[in-house]
Picture 1 (cartoon, rainbow, N blue to C red):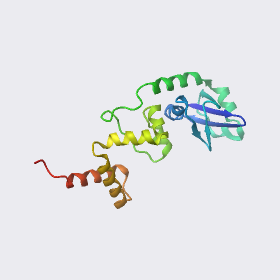
Picture 2 (picture 1 turned 180 degrees about the vertical axis):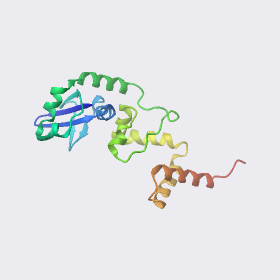
Picture 3 (picture 1 turned 30 degrees about the vertical axis):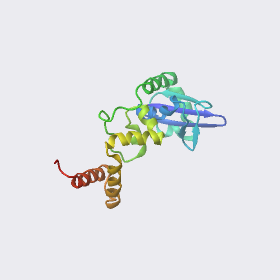
Picture 4 (picture 1 turned 90 degrees about the vertical axis):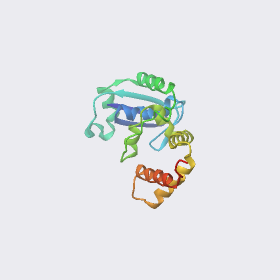
Length: 183
């Protein structure tokens, strides 16, 4: 388990019991020198300090009354340099896989679990950048992304109880039925 602390006088914020995937998602903007939005603040890597500890899972009673970070320090090991270097090395690679190689992320009931399922910090960073996310989605939608997006919006409006993947399948079927067959 990982435990994270952000400090920028006079503020500090701690997050406990993070998985490796949770930590990668949080470190992605940090290693790209972009502000990290966590809690109710934006933490700039140029002004704030970040500490990451690796240690055992901390139970609720160990976190209560402001004792969490001291407990994490006592029972864990400071791995800040190692995890930042690893996140930086992963981010230095290609920022996004080609559309043909992109694997769909598993469906999730909560946003944090969905972020934890991201394959790399670069993928997590794309979520923070709406333009990059739009480009990646357009590449996945294919050659006629505008028509598919319009059909997908219509299918979503017509069937609000369905998931995004189900309405996408309806949109694709609608486009296939409208397309003239091979000549």
